[in-house]
Image 1 (cartoon, helix red, strand yellow):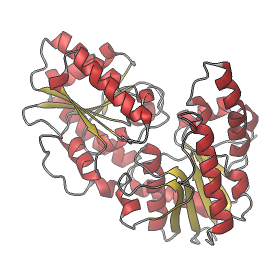
Image 2 (image 1 turned 45 degrees about the vertical axis):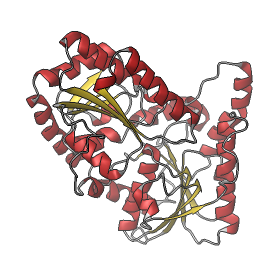
Image 3 (image 1 turned 180 degrees about the horizontal axis):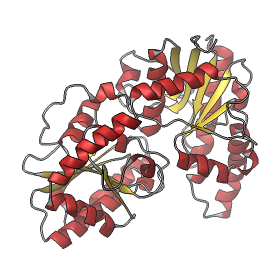
Image 4 (image 1 turned 30 degrees about the vertical axis):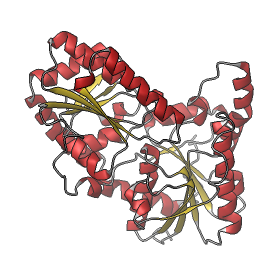
Length: 411
């Protein structure tokens, strides 16, 4: 029975472009490669703003509930996201007519009680506890979040199996969901589908990478404040101060950008303003969203990746970068501590501009370091994060789902 194929539905809030979306798509591709039937139900899918596999028919996608609001007068984003996900779950279980054995749900657990109306096994993938991704500065915000936080913890515990994306997140899960001590989440590292990165790499156009620059630092993150992209801008200013010049040095800030998301628009403008204030306009360019082809080109032709999020729960971009022989300078916390090997495949630094600048200067002064680190990074990724190993792992999880020992805490 362990080797039998299953019918799997992935339930995801918004199939746009981001690390969470890439993770579930790769999981679906891995399972499909092993003969399982896979498809997606989502509250939103825009063919103009999504990963190629969800646009070209590789993965079947059905949208349900996109007519529901994303906010109420610019507020209550979490509540609306929960309602949209619950509606998508209701559609899946009651109206879709689909036959399924497993539901792979991620990000929002509030829909799990609805999913329990079916006979399917429910796997919940916790990228990071949602309750930790927002602030509660006002009493009103605390009151608003209280039932949402309670529901997140209660419904997460209802899944047949809980997975997290790193050992770091597993620790946070334990500290956050204090009523779920009986659950020991499994760790499934998200990884890139390397076949996408192995495709042809066109020469960079001047609007993507300036022609007259010999050292390219690259930042890839969604335009969100929690990604701390300003750290890369301030670090470049520190490099200018220490090095005396930025001749031949350039920073490309590329990231997921959605016109519907106010924070994306606001943060992009904030970063442009910061670059102007630090007199770095001629040494920084901004790319708002990009295709897979452009991403390959950026990673292939960049000298080093600057990965700025602090306490990032995992982070797929450093692995993609290292696979493309582009070393990584990252904050020494969270997921990068499990993926980047300090002084071998890059540098792990404090979340401070001077710490990042020191690491950047090492590469600027001796560019052979970047090549040596890039070669070591590629080998490291192939050894630890291969698509084959990932496929074996997730296939075993799905095939054995339902075994009583999978998510039980050992005495």
